[in-house]
Image (cartoon, rainbow, N blue to C red; front, side, top):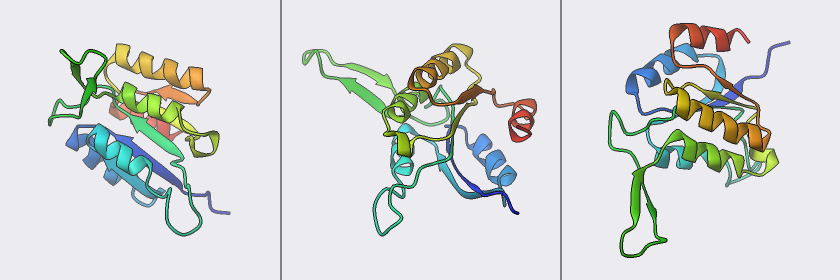
Amino acid sequence: MKKAQKRVLVLDDDSYRHEVFSKYFVGMVSKLGMALTYEDFLCLLSDGWSGPPPRKQRWDIIMLDHDLGIERPGTRLYDASDPHRPVIREATGLDAARVIADLPPRLRPEKVIIQSLNPVGAERIYQVMLDARIPAVKLPFTDKGLQTWMNQ
């Protein structure tokens, strides 16, 4: 019996990593969503949530990088709590993790893979997933990390 193929969503601003994932996942996944920015991630995350049945398809595995906007400008988030001086910052994988944690249980992924090379950012994402009771693993993007995950 053939193992069911998964829907995998990747958030990473590094186009080289996108190339690696695209080649690596060929024939292994039923759908591969590749987001370079937080905005792209939000659009892809909701892909399959409307239209004819079956509606509300979830992504089985979501892979997150923390630091976004290094290769290209990222999404800016505004905090309007001070109308005279709003705080502006670049969106990160932590923001994406918070969105995932807020999803209804039927739309949550079965696993989140944190591939960030930023250990502090990766730990923050991991804690959000832990608090939301979403299985997560920290595997920094390296050849060894990718092989380890794929062999699990």
